[in-house]
Image (tube, rainbow, N blue to C red):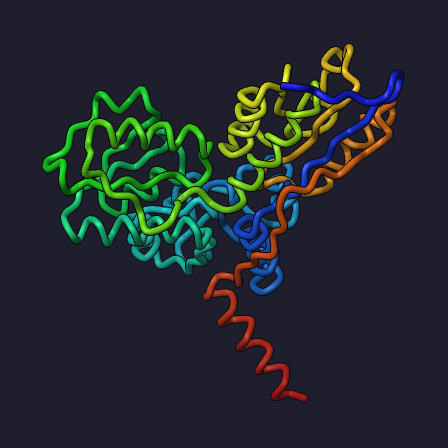
Length: 331
């Protein structure tokens, strides 16, 4: 690979576009903020609304309370489900505690849930490609636990067994590496030639777009910094994608003060991007930090346009409409 460098003595930052918030994350964060405005604090949220430390801490200051299980939520309270989705059993538990629920599951995750339910009804064995323990995987598996087998990467394929090789389909966690997922799919197809693919790719548009942008950065950068939290699957994948694309070094940081200045030794071009749960303020902080160290030239590298938006959860839309109608009637 030919690696372009800046002119002697110059230092620059290549800023990926798109980066940061995807439509599902934007919807979920706004949903918490709107719920706090509409109903007042506290609003309970089961698990982190999105996987970003700064976002969670900011919402906590506004009155959100994050819990691990719905049993921690006082009866009769409001609980919101995170963007990663939950299993049907969680909805049942919430109903038993008489909780008002707001479902902020990303619509793209909901699509995978519906696919799992449909294929289970048709009595297919479902091979779910994903990482064990990830909240999204737990939620999807809960839709059809008797039909779903988790496949955690291509090395796990040898252990997979199905009832009927001619009635097997694959689904996937939405935040995986596209390349790794397809490697797993290829291995599964070798073992099960009759394997059926889902009607559309499960890996979300934002994950794919951000990985494509990282590959572009890796063509010219000697270092790629990915802003994102360590529990963010899509952010971790971008570091891996950068390294696989040939960049000499790539690191994940939550914010600028986690950057090690030693990473900049001999580096003239820094690639910069952020995970799908990361607000721009954290990227801006890294840009300022780099500028103070001589990397003042910032060039945007655009690989895709994103115009997708998702409406707020239906529970919030209903109550916001009712409030607007009530205010209008009083005029």
